[in-house]
Image (cartoon, rainbow, N blue to C red):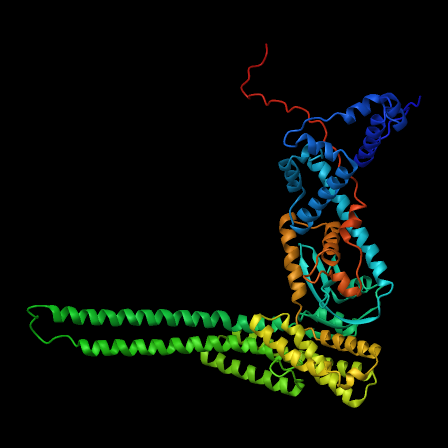
Length: 563
């Protein structure tokens, strides 16, 4: 007869599997003692396992189901999913997972204390970080060499957190805490993040921080692009509040003039209604009313001028965004740098006249001048874009007519398609139609492009897509990520390095776009195994609940002492 001389701790899954074997053996007629000996457990232990203990809030059938191997695996999946969604997707804490287990009744089969669930949460985060490293290494093996742009910025938790994202795929290349934000620290961190990746950074989009500019231009020898939003924001700060105040003052002046006119008219009507009329010369109501009307007209004129200046400032801010494109959004044609420069000059001249007409203070004009200085950076970004596109297309070694087709039709069409995806409905439909208008002739069987070998056509399309993705004028992806991280920081007061890495992993390898792809899949160019399934395999089964000790009654403070 086999005897268990040592006590072996069995996981929830092992116990469920042994219970399934025991049930089959007992059904075959084997005695309980023999079955327990074959499993290496005491007979009383096996009897206790088989006993279905009634639990509050859970039907006995559910308890019996959770005691099977399939039920144990399902419970494991459910608890791990709770931690991933509640603590890493929704930004809540472990205590809400405990509350969810308690309210659902699962605290009768799973330990719902903070200590037990915190241990599970640590396992989930460590598994996420470990699997992210493994996936990154595996996906980088066959990744083709790429030239990419990056968007960079810092956020504070309150420690300095450096964030760099590849904007096309939205893949986070760098997200880590650093002691400072100098150019050397940025360069060292990005080089470490790119280790093992066949990626060359040729362009960096950020604000005008000196450290970021030095890191991009000097250390990385890449083209720096000043974020369009920061230029528009400076113009908005220099005009928005002051012009809005003028509109508000003009509205108050119109309202006051209208009240004064109403008062004069009411006084005239009251005088005319008197019977008998007072002796003497009547007041000059007509002159008073005429003066009130003149004041009202003057106030309304100034109100219209204030509203016009406000609308003009807003239109100028929007026009900066319309101009800063390599291709005209109305015709789909290339915008020469000189043409864009002339458009910028006209906008700045218009804003200068507006500042003079509105009598903006020196501080506001300094903000507009600060934004105007970014024009040089924006024009340099366009020059770099056109030069890079020309070099890449020439490397295809196409016939001159086909080269022009790629430069003037294919790449503009792909660029318009990308801009359309970031626009509101009306503009999106118009840009999509313009893109299709440029692409349709290229798809005709009689077009010279269709006579090329399929492999060459595929290569042309890949180069054209890379050129269309090259122009990145905004670092909004990093700004959005920083705002997203701030929500977690507000709830936790501080993010540990492990949790920050876990949040990065969720962003890169778990979150799906509507097309069903992750950021990693778009960046590396091929699919990967589902992250959750890999994490599930590296997290232990949830612990069973412990028997709770009865809570001692708190004695009254005035309980008399025993003599």
